Image (cartoon, rainbow, N blue to C red; front, side):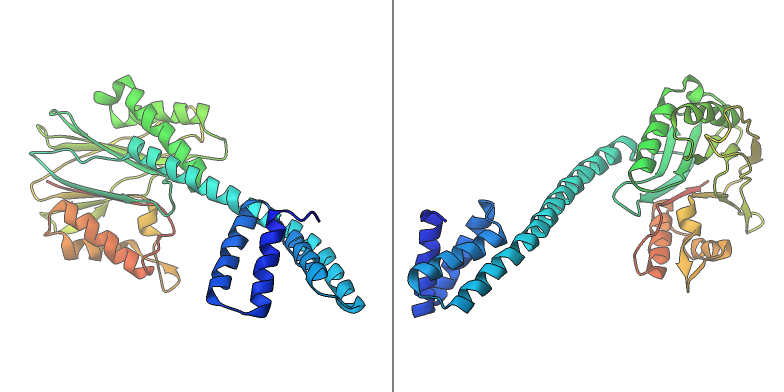
Length: 332
């Protein structure tokens, strides 16, 4: 090994350490270790450097010399594993950074907003289980009607997030979206998903429209988790009809439509399966449990209802979501 500046510095520190250990020497050695690592000096090279210094400064007996040569051979194999591990860690850090950026972009693209409504109090909350979400909601009030969409890509992570971004742009680009019936909207979206999404991926969606003049709420569903309809007059919760084939399974699917008259005091609650698949004591909670949580807070404004329900359900799972969570409340 050439007697370069790295070796000279190492020799100086080693001699000072062997003759008189001090905190200053230890601090300098830590700084040198960091520098050598940045310069790509492997663990085997470091051991070889140590051996070279020992040869120059001390007369090594044959056994010690052979043992250190053996250690260098061992460290060569260890070093390969070490640098491969470091390379994988660096790649993982880079991937994590890219995922963070992608998650922020996705959030900006599909983040739902709750519009102001004179005829309804609306609250919505959506929280991903991981960095990127496969859930999507969209609430639009154009002054003539209120349109609400909630969807869930079957799957998690980046593929589900990319598919959901496609759904968002498909919703924005369908011309009939401003005046189309729920059944026709789902039929159009179904063709888009069937053409563009991977065959192993499909989407559940609920689409509903409320007319503030007639007070009629009409809706269609593509295999989505049934929501709840609260009748103030009867003081009971009913399941919103949710039959229909998921988007992307069959290009020619048609969707049925339901309609009901909304009375003052009635409420509508929409959700993804991340709400109903919350576990308590290792079993999934029943829908009746969610209704009990809603009843406890239904006197509150809609925005506080959805936050309260999310908090209570997360608490059951020690504040760790296993699936994307989206919950919408509408009070009329």
